[in-house]
Image (tube, rainbow, N blue to C red):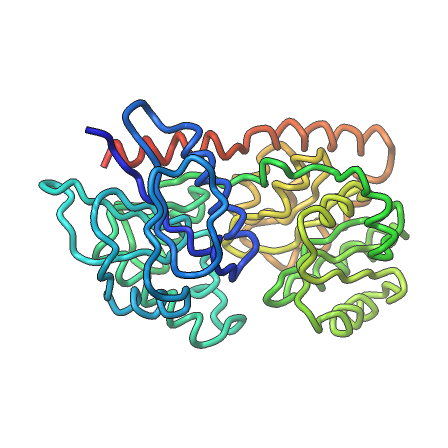
Amino acid sequence: MSVLLRVVLDQLITETDPDLAMASGELARALVQTAPSGCAVGAIVPTGRDLAIDGLAEVRRLGMGRRELAAAWQLGVTAGVGGGLIHSPTLLAPLTRHDRINEHDQTVVTLWDLLPWESPDELSRSTVAWHKGMLKRARKHADAVVVPTHAMAQRLEQVTGFAGRTRVIAGAPASDFAVPVDAIGRRRTLGIPETVIAVVGDTRASSALPVAFAAIAASGVDLPLVVLEAAEGQEPAIIDMAEASGISGTRVHVRAEIDAADRAAILDASLLLVAPSRRVAFPWRVVEAMKLSVPVVAVASPDHREVIVDGGAVVGDPEDAESDAAALGDAIGQALATSRALDRLGVLSGDRGRAFSWQVSADRVWQLHADL
């Protein structure tokens, strides 16, 4: 008898987060490619556009849109889903009572960050309520919760009391993430200079950006800066932050919600990626930079330390956020002091970047369901 693993792919029908959509698609394709003998992959999706995933054995399209599906599943209404092995690359899953022992039903969900618990003021009340409600259901009904780092697993247990069923499976950049052939043209269209320092912002808020700006100002480096991941409308506030740190606003280029090809084009022009955030979240932009061998300087958050390891300069005291700007500034100055230092960081970055693969992640997902 064949085994069917069904993956919840709502993000490929109605995208609410580009990183979640990328992760969902990449994991589904890798699961198809790595399926053990006698196993197949299916999909569970809301109504909407067609699903562009080859090799699926089954697609179960539910009779409601994603918004309605999210509301129904939050209430435990899962009619029409069916049982079996269900894996969600997000927290959205049909979490109800099921029989794993006798009926071999399994439900696994995934968390990529803990912002609703650690930084609820940065999100809407409805978003925070939905995430907390779904995790409450997961604590009751999920057979496992996947997180991308051991640090996040530990923090999840601390902030939510969720213990015993966490599994660590890292994410990766998109398999086709690479410098596009028209990178120069893309940078011209975006108005990006040919030599820059990239700074990881955030689509939700920019609380870590003052740390990055203070560090860059202290380093004495006089290069244009590109802030990635800013939300629409944040540009004036971000430029004000830079100027408050002594950096001319004319040096700062804020690019909101750009696609992967444009990000790769910007990283191609970046001497350095600066990652100043301590958020408990998988650092997508960092792993993208490492795939392109871009030198990385990051604050020593638990997630950065685990993901980057020796693939970049991870600096600062994990117990003292006040030291972040000074530590980052020293590291930026040292990295850019000589071409040899910069080249060394680039080699370390590229070596570490090869550790992240969706095929490896898919193998671990198959193993997780086999263990369950």
